Image (cartoon, rainbow, N blue to C red; front, side, top):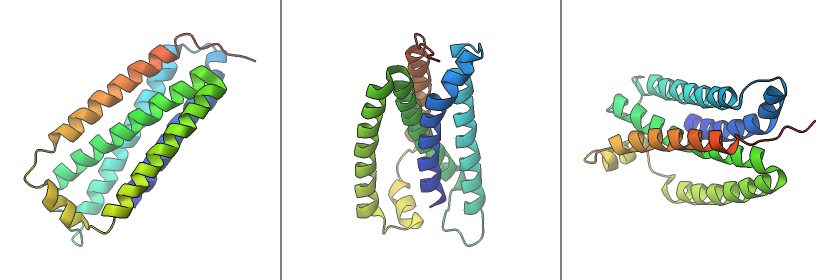
Length: 168
């Protein structure tokens, strides 16, 4: 549940950073590149911190996790994918104002419905069952695709904010 809550807070926090902090920092003469890089690095640091805390929980003797490093890599990859989603949606909301907020709300509602249906269908499985499902599969693609999507979303956010006008 810690990971589910952290996903929600990370996505909402990233979107909120674009809506509230970007205009303030730009009005204080910060560059668009430095503002986007700050959000990019802060969200990336949050992903690493959450993966590390999850790894500490999995190292406990009561944990069912057999391969902690693989679990941390899968967790970090999934969190980077959600971070990329939050970064992209935050840039859309900041760049296009009310229209962007409407698009962000619709996409977030759709993603929440899909994610909720997945939890409802697969929520009864334990960590051991999920790990047995992933055991004979190469899970490195989750981390690699998370990194690629995160970098692409950071680039898209930088491009979206390139022509952002700050209104007083």
